[in-house]
Image 1 (cartoon, rainbow, N blue to C red):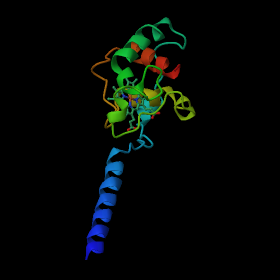
Image 2 (cartoon, rainbow, N blue to C red; image 1 turned 90 degrees about the vertical axis):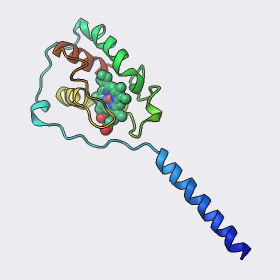
Image 3 (cartoon, protein in one colour; image 1 turned 120 degrees about the horizontal axis):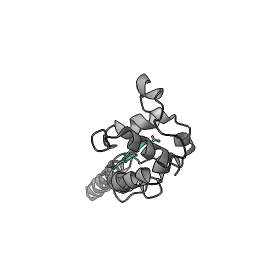
Image 4 (cartoon, protein in one colour; image 1 turned 120 degrees about the vertical axis):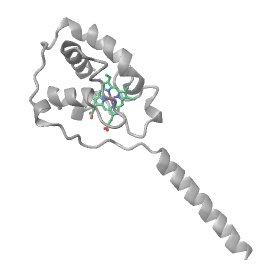
Length: 136
Ligand code: HEC
């Protein structure tokens, strides 16, 4: 009898431990579905435009750093409390993305990645920000 109680306690402890770990583990967001009209989008500013390191950087520090981190590595102060893993902008997979795809992910977002269409209204500011994160 004592043994079965001990066994039950061990099993319960194991279940609690495993489920707590599952609840805390972050999941990668997986592939995005980008609408065609975004995929083919072209920037309204040129690569190397002066606004990238001024407007683009300032916008990033104000709206994005808290989750994405100062260098875009996905290590911002809020990142650990999210359910979704914050991807790194230094990754090859990110660097390979088309401008329009980055535009959609940044402006429209999904789930824990917020929508910024209202907060960043100017088209030029949006592209300065996108080129800034591409430079990280
Ligand atoms: C509240 C936290 C948070 C803030 C603030 C935030 N992001 Fe994100 N971002 C995320 C998360 C989480 C993901 C992953 C979402 C997913 O895959 O579903 C993500 C994904 C992205 C992606 C897709 C990257 C990839 O490789 O898949 C881009 C681009 C992006 N964010 C840009 C930005 C920009 C630019 C800003 C600021 C204007 C910003 N984010 C602000 C949390 C945030």
